[in-house]
View (tube, rainbow, N blue to C red):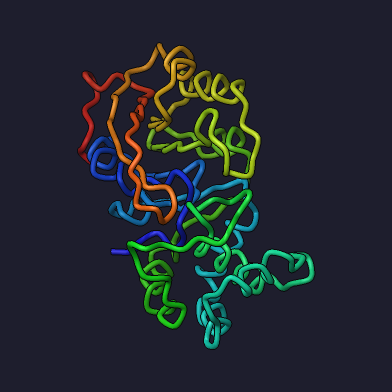
Length: 262
């Protein structure tokens, strides 16, 4: 089984055991806010799969791993995991690099950034886990390369993407930036969640949405079925667990259309 290729703030590995069994039958699977795409890599393949993110650097990385893995890996042959190299990548203007070099830069920064943050990155070290082994990148990414081989990788606004791929046989998984949470590198105001709720109520397909448990979120999505899931997060390398609740929101009536049959 493939695993996510980069750490990502708000990654869904811990929620996978709860989320994946909730998926209804579908032929087309769309991750609207892919991020680290943990569920995509951990779930069984669908007939048609779409990964989307508004972050162009992330999308470029997925496309390079999908189509140019060998050349991508070659850039890490003599790479070192160090604070100095991290800072050098940070100050290198991306527009001066090729697509593959930009993917290498983004991958290196994301692998070493504290807490998997995209915005406001700082060098992160852990006392509970070894550093990423840059010499084993090809081995680690080969399964992801195969898993991505048949996927459509998009770089679109979430609303336009959902309208493009909405069919009765489509399942959308939405993992947008969490409300009042920093580090995603994008502005996502409360009005965006209102738009999501509106579209979830109108689509032909089905949608599952995961968000942090907050009164504003419960108010906006009050018309939908919702599960509450307690979860512990370790942010960065300090080994400190933070207990929080997340909500899983469904666009359809699960009593008339059961889940877990895909």
